[in-house]
Image 1: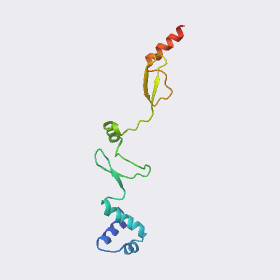
Image 2 (image 1 turned 90 degrees about the vertical axis):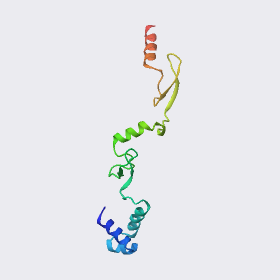
Image 3 (image 1 turned 30 degrees about the vertical axis):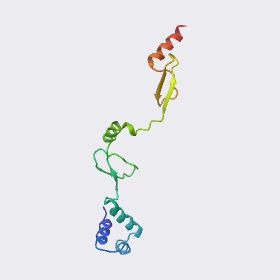
Image 4 (image 1 turned 30 degrees about the horizontal axis):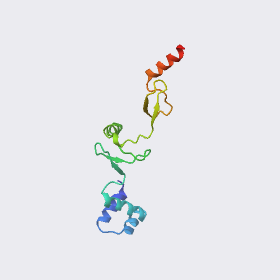
Amino acid sequence: MTAWHECAERMWATGATLRQIAEATDIAVSTIRRHLLTLERGGKDPATIGWCPVCGQPLRQGTSRAGQRFCCTAHRRTWWANHPEHCTRHATYTFTCTGCGVRFSTYGQPGRRYCSQTCYHTTRRARLAC
């Protein structure tokens, strides 16, 4: 937290107006208002964007990433492994196997023709034998 944040909070606690705080810190009134309202609403640091759902550690906005949800990769993987119901899998395709005629479903492979590698090899050997 910078010096003007602390100064603004001290002045606000003693009853100073937004205009008085802005003049004393040489910061725009709207910036002072936004900072103080953020503190009043949640009492959290303005740089904090949320908490890790696995360990509860506060997340801070990085310079290169937006929308950080987990504090580390290990916690991200753990959470998604334990919550498969939150996955939205829209790329599920249903086909009929060219080799054996069995209907099968596949995820993320719209051009698939065979239900298994064994079926593919069997069909290929049958075609080559002729």
